[in-house]
Image (cartoon, rainbow, N blue to C red; front, side):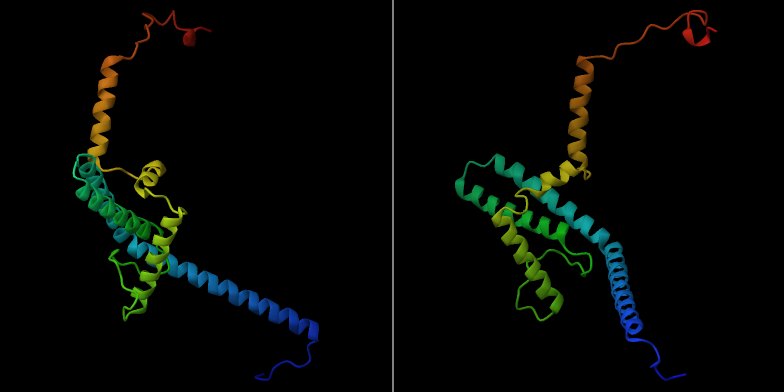
Length: 187
């Protein structure tokens, strides 16, 4: 029973090998998908909070930059803003099958393989931003996709909406006094 079957035809052997290779590829893809799901669920909170922190810092810098008159300070803030936007892309686009860390500028000569891969990914993000492949303002892209904004922005919108409602009150429909005047009850 431990012997291989030598009595099968070459065509059957080729078919069996093809099925075996197909099943092996399917198994590999399912294992990869399982790994991605596991790591994505594990690092979901990390990515979420890193994204929130970066969006908050970007908003602070944008507000501070609007009030600057000094050219040197504005230039420094613009450089910091570009760095934060690069890190935001890094957090949003980091592969699901890799362990996620904080978006600290990792060095390419790091002893750890994961840090070297993260540095390589960050370098590619920077390169794509310079080429224009990635959005220059990823925080606006998040807003357009409907990612929840900070409470401060929502509060400002609600005040504007309240002001609009006061300017144009909704019109009320006249109510019919009795059931006889209502079309619904007529038969």
